Amino acid sequence: MNVADSEVVASVLKESGFEVTGDINEAGLILINTCSIRENAEQRIWGRLRAISHLKKKRRDLRIGLIGCMAERLKEKVLETEKLVDLVVGPDAYRDLPALVAETEAGHKAVNVLLSREETYSDISPVRMDKDGVTSFVSIMRGCNNMCAYCVVPYVRGAERSRDPESIIREVNELLDEGYREVTLLGQNVDSYRWDKEGKITDFPELLERVALTDPLLRVRFSTSHPKDLSDELLHTIARNKNICRHIHLPAQSGSSRILKLMNREYTREWYMDRIKAIRKIIPDCAISTDMIAGFCTETDEDHKETLSLMEWAQYDFAYMFKYSERPGTKAARKFRDDVPEEIKSKRLDEIIGLQNRLSAKTKKLDIGKVFEVLTEGRSKRSGDHLSGRTSQNKVVVFPEEGHKKGEYLNVLIERCTSATLIGKII
Image 1 (cartoon, one colour):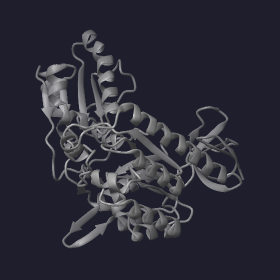
Image 2 (cartoon, one colour):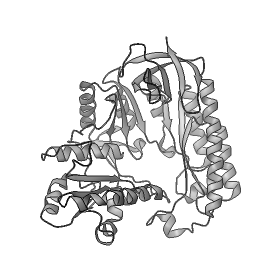
Image 3 (cartoon, helix red, strand yellow):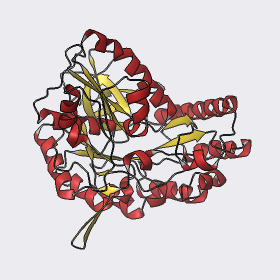
Image 4 (tube, helix red, strand yellow):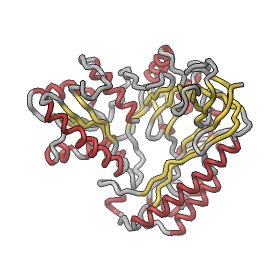
């Protein structure tokens, strides 16, 4: 989502005469797009700000700004206490960037972190920052109404609002015209996408199918689905459209119904398992990934074992795994004590990661001998004479170049694998 936001920012500034540069020493304006979802993300941003602060000493006309989620949450600290930036702009105020930059040029600090109930940037054609020119992101909604106890997103990105489907289709067609072959539809919870125009409702399954029907050679992905909202209708939509990728990211966060209730996730372990069963039944070749949090408030060894057993049962293809870190302002920070010791969190996370590594290796070994259609995204990072791409199931495949180039669909026979990559040959 930060990539999509950065592309909107680049477009807004380009309209006012700015140009994007890949050389930080050429820049007259440096904007750092930020995330507040996890503490380690914020710590990396503080490190980045301090690392580039020396540039201000050499160039007095240089302007540095903080944009995005962290900007809204920590505006006073970055402006007044640390004095590292000239402007702070929240995720709903990007249209004001040119005026705010002008304000800093007059010698003032500039701030706009107001949240909006309407802003979706639907009329802005993003400046694509993708390196491969093959895959890109399309934001279909902003904000979130799910008040998960651990999550800061509703506080820093505001309430949920969906984007006009016609503007989404227009952006997808623009990408097709520019040669892109894959789009990922983005939302904090894409399943709750809903556009109401004079009583005519467009929901996410309908939008997804409309995007898929723009061109059979366009691959369509989406992220992220919320388990409480994942419908059979959506699964059937995926099943009947070959170019909708066979991969669903379905964050569980915990395998314990007790912990899920504390997290305010609005589903139980049993509900989640039913959704996995539905995916396996309706889309048998679908890969499933997840998020897991280790050490949420009051989590016991038994709760942790339930998470491990859910992972074993689900046989996830891959996962994003984290230790719980308390975010100021969230329900968990206000109502619960962060009472799981750090060493216990680390131990449990290590066990989750170790298990997922085994599961990922197992699913990749099962792919050996199969043929997959791979969309080529560019050269392999490790070998100049090999190409790299992904399957519909979002698995990375490396194979000999043999005169082919990025943007092509190729059938690849999988011959072997590493822990992270499938390796094969074109057939």
